[in-house]
Length: 158
Image (cartoon, rainbow, N blue to C red):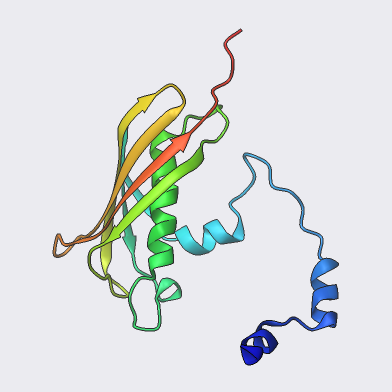
């Protein structure tokens, strides 16, 4: 346990250097963050309809785990982003995630072409339920299925 604590400890000079960093707040409409650019770069929108978004994505090496598979964290991020994208309405404040459940069914390798389909299952008041399927385009095999629930306090019409 002591070795783990020592390994995870941050030297004082590194801690001070990080505390001096100026990170400006992000506002709606700003350019994508580094995180969004890193994780979603290469995502192509194929089809958009009310309640449906279909995208394609070629698995890049930057999102692979040590076994050369698309990392589960990258899949979770896709479920989060695509679940949000299908319910987003321009001009209305962003929805917040309430719950996300993901079943990882098989692996996607680097350079596999994926199809990511996001559908609205239902909406009631400010609550939205979505399903996101990540499928291998060549084989049709389902890589993951995610359910994403979001909530939004819609602006008053008064």
